[in-house]
Image (cartoon, rainbow, N blue to C red; front, side):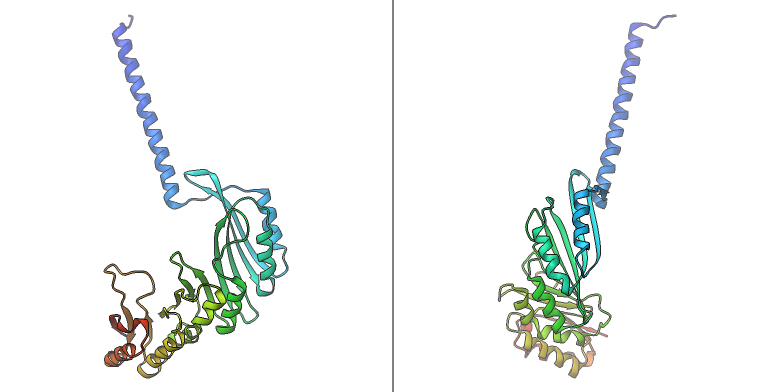
Length: 289
């Protein structure tokens, strides 16, 4: 029995539709897979002998400890490799590492991160955005900044950075000394830190730790530290967050948040108002222990 022409055409149509459906499903699955890789920022290794040689050159500098290197691509830009170097280095070797980074002939942009250790067990971390050539741009003067932190706050673990909005920031979030009072000398030295970092004199600076965020305006460091000492020594304040730190609130109103004994609330707020600082007129939110 032979198959009629209309039946053959019908079967071909069904087969064609099935192929199209399978192709569409395959494309959809592929799109979802690439989308998931993009969301997760999945890294796909793209090793390079040239990059490995450069990392080995950095590791060979006397005083360099750990060198973590990675060269990878991410979806969907599989054609554009990224490179990263995370280097732990002794203070004595820091200039040599910076000189090597500036003189490197490696052609791809490198995402640099340095953790500098000093003899007094201070650790200062700085990071640079990838640049196509030339010296890494840490947006601050690395060597004077490390020396200033080591001199003013020995033994602390600090990240120094200049944020996208231009604010100079020193964050001490990993140090075991979480009491607020341990950060006051750092606040008192804010103007010195600004000068050491080599940024403009009118640049905002933020000092932050587990229980303190302080944003003294230029020239306010001594008065700001004095206010904090008063709040701690006379009123037992344990936590203080300057409303100018950490971004803009949803309603646009910066609030100073303070934690302490509720019996001292009025005295604490009066001390803030009398400080003459930039934050003196900001709303105060008082939180109990």
